Image 1: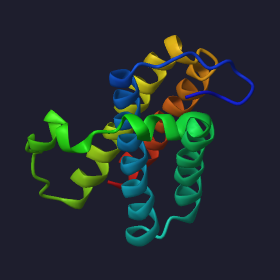
Image 2: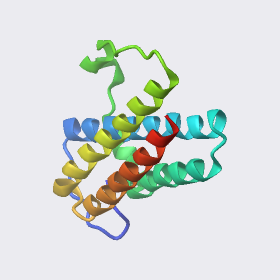
Image 3: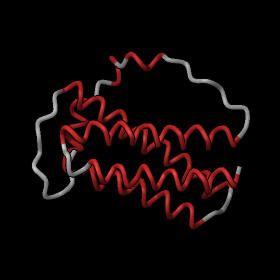
Image 4: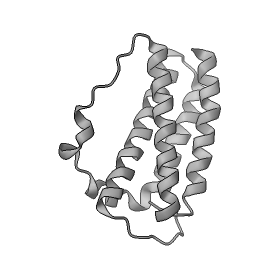
Length: 141
């Protein structure tokens, strides 16, 4: 993981798995929110903002994405069998995915401080954008 023009530090396999999982978690949560804003609320400005955030994650991580994928081991992931709580309302889906994205970006921010220090402020910026979007989202719920 690195912002362009930064020196890459080596990442061990298990840490790369952690980064990959959290990058996926953040993007998946954002995609659920983006589709909620697009198809349920017809809120084009929110769709544009969420898409920009998701693309920002790609921009930050693109240089090392193949390294993260190589570390992926979905079959052996002990978290595969964890049962998630059910959702009873559409608003629960949106709120849970906002929290999922925020938490995942926080993990990316913290670990990037070690492996790609220049990326940490970029992740922090995204995390705060998500806090702003959460406030807007809660008004919709």
